[in-house]
Amino acid sequence: MAVVKYTKAVALKVVSNYGEQKGKIVKKTKTYGDVKPAATDEALYAAYKHIKGLQEPIGEGCMRVTTDDLVENA
Image 1: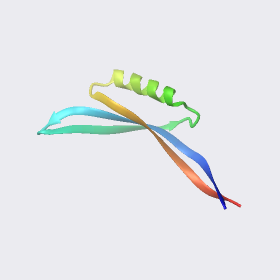
Image 2 (image 1 turned 60 degrees about the vertical axis):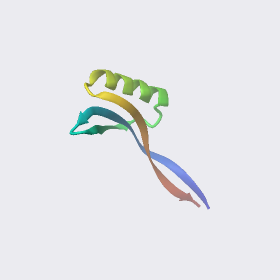
Image 3 (image 1 turned 90 degrees about the vertical axis):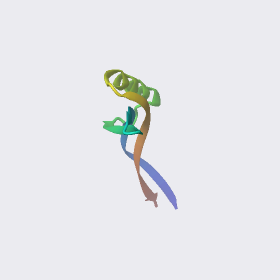
């Protein structure tokens, strides 16, 4: 039994630091979906850098989120 993986969706998740509020560090994430599966990690990081330059909160990092379908190959 072989299992085949098909990429269903790719997204870019950006983590932002909004600073300290009421004694706690506030971090929020924003996910940008509908990214082309063929997009390279370098292209996603370049997009993150552009987003980080446009926003007020401090950008703390980014993640590539991939959703895959696993199908049994008969």
